[in-house]
Amino acid sequence: MLFIDRVDAGRKLARALDPLPQDALILGIPRGGVTVARAIADVLRRSLDVLVVRKLGAPHNSELAIGAIGPNGAVTLDEDVLRALQGVSAEYIQREATAQVAEIDRRMSLYRGDQPFPDVGGRHCVVVDDGIATGSTARAALRWLREANAQPVVLAVPVAPERTVHELEKEADHVVVLFSPQTFVAVGQWYERFDQVDDDEVVAALKRAPGAS
Image (cartoon, rainbow, N blue to C red; front, top):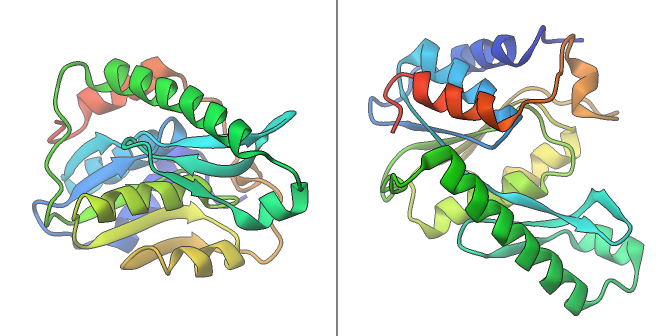
């Protein structure tokens, strides 16, 4: 285990990210990524917000990601997983995407209320999660920021598989990963404490962070 908890991971990431421009925006992927992002924002005294992207689950196995979807409805598919599963229909992908868009809308309303999402055009944005397995969710977040003209786009995570890191380096201007093992089972194996994060904790983290939108 490398990290005590998500706060410990965030503080260590903050040291790796320092310095950041004064107007840099730290964007946590909920739920666990927001806890890590808040710790970074606390240490570096930068603005924090939330970027909601959702995994597209495989048929009969919602934990297996066949892709992800961002706030603008753009779908990113994992072609390797789709080839391995064989026979995942376009109709199924559309139904799953529609369901996840509804969840994105619910979470954005819950987390941000009626506050508009900040303008990220030309802004230094750092996407943060508590760890990455397949990378589909992070990829969707990075591509959404590209389309919104954020510049530069940085990905910062405590741990991710070496192969996934190399793939995500094609999507971001810079990737900061503290540990990238070749053998990877699950994100939680690298934490001493890896409890589930609920919506109330996300809302509290966003309200209490320095410069929160």
